[in-house]
Length: 486
Image 1 (cartoon, rainbow, N blue to C red):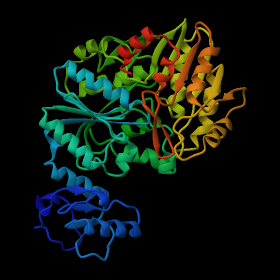
Image 2: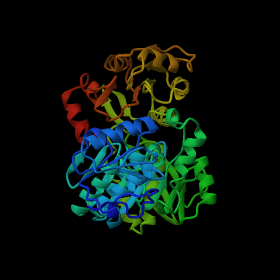
Image 3: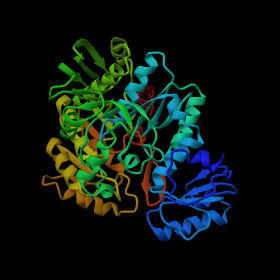
Image 4: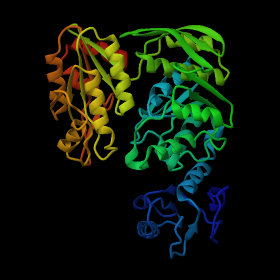
C-alpha cells in the first residue's frame, strides 16, 4: 500500500515521501520488519527517538511521530494516536463502514449490555460480532485481547475479519482508555450507549472530572449517529440536556423514554413491565437485580433505536443466559454462592444490595482490589462491603506489582467492624463457604469469569468458578458450566 493511501485524511506537518510502498503498520519497534511503517505512540521525546531508531534499524521505510525527531524518514503529525488509528482504518479499507457498530461505554454494565444486545440481534436473524472484556467473538472465533477495547491495529483487523465473514452488526465495549487514546478514531457508531459514570481508573485520569469528560466526549457526532443514555446517572442527565444527536433516555428512578414498573426479582431473575416509547411489554429476564433491569432497558432502547421489533427482542430475553461472572448463582447445600465481576465502589454496592434483598440468612462477602490501579477506591469498597454484609473477608484480586498486604491494608482503612484478611483467594473462599449456613449468601466479588490472577508480570491460572468447584459436587459443576459457560 502507498503511504499516500494510508494517510488519506491525516494531516502531515512536514514533507515526506508519500509514494513509498509499505507492507504493514506497526506500533512496536521490536516487531518491525523490512518494508513496514512504524508509529511512535510513546509519551516522551527520548523514548520516541529510541523506538524510531530501532524501527528504522529493523527495516522500517518510514516512522511517524508527533515529536520533531532528527530523523530522515520521519513523518510528523499532530497526534500520533489519532494518526495511527486512522492509518489502521485505511490499511484495512475502512471495514467498520461496511457494518453497523454499537458502542457501549460506562463504568459498569458494558459487558452485560453488549451481551444482551448481541443476543437480541441474533434473535432477529442478524450475523453479529462482539468486542469487549470477554474478547473478540464472531463466526465461531474467540480471540482474547488484554484490553476491553483493543488497540487500533487489532480493532481494525477484527473489523476486517468480521466483515469478510459476513458480520452485519458489531456490538462493542468502548473503554475510557480507548476514547482517551483515540483507539476508536474514525469508527462511526450507529448508536452510543452510556450506562453510568462512577469512580474507576483514577490512577490514569487523575480526577473524576477528567474521567467523566473523557466518557462524555464519545457522545458527539464525531463518533455516534444516535445515543441511549441513563437518566439515573447524574452525568447522563447533564448529557441529555446538551447532546446534539438524537437520544433516548432509560431509567428506573428518574423520568425517561424507556422505564420499568412493578419489578419483581429473585435468585432466578427478574420480571417487570417495560414502557418502551409508550408501548408496554411484560419482560422476563434471567438476569438478577435492579441494576440488570437497567441494563435490559438500555439494551431494549438500542433495539428500538435501530428500528427492530421490540416485542421480538423482549421475547428473546427469556432465553438469554447471564454473562459468565456477572451475578452467577450457584446453589450448594441450601446456601447460595454468587460470583460477580464487581470491582468498583458502585459495582460492589449494586451487587451487595441485590444480594441483601434476596438473602434469607446471613450475607458473606469475599473481595479484594487490584494492584497498580486506582487506590482511592479501596477504603470506599471496604466501607461498602461492611455496610451491607454480615461477614467480610478481604483477599487478593490481581495484585500485579503491589504488595498484597498493602492493598488489603488500604481496604481496611475504610472498615470499622470486625472482619478478617486471608490473602490466598482459594482459602478465603473455602473459609467463607464453610462458615456459612443454609439460606446464607456468599458473594465472591472482583474477578468474575477471569481465568487468571496477575501477580507481578505473570498471569497465573486461577478462576473463581474453579475455586468453588473444588468444594462443590461434580454434578453441580456440570450444571453451572452449562448455565454460565464457566
